[in-house]
Amino acid sequence: MKRVMLGLVLLLAGCGSLLTEQRMAKLNTDVQAIQQDFQGLSATFTPEQREKYARAQTVQDEATFQEFYASLTPPQQTTMTALLERTHQAEQERQMLSQRVQQDLAMQEVTRRQLPRQIPFFPSVP
Image 1 (cartoon, rainbow, N blue to C red):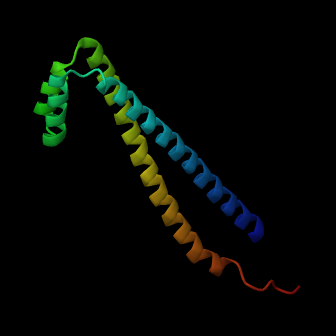
Image 2 (cartoon, rainbow, N blue to C red):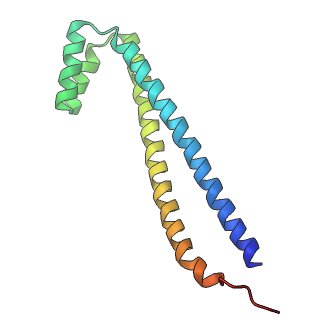
């Protein structure tokens, strides 16, 4: 019975890590796509827009960003809004994955501490 429980714990722990790794790989792909799409958008910036974007990057406050955003054409604003939404979703996923990894590490530590007490090194002789 203990061996079955141990096997089940190890199986579930392994599957959880695999799913987390798959989600991390997908997140990485999503982030790369966002970066590429932004590069495409930024290629359409006028010199004035580039200057405002550089200022917004340096200052990093809402008012400066809004000034940059207002300088964009309506199609550029639409693309920028979509990129910002995708970025926000990616950040939420990153935070969830970070929390999941921390939880997994904590559970692994608890399991490591409990297993020696639950499973004897030498089986009992009937």
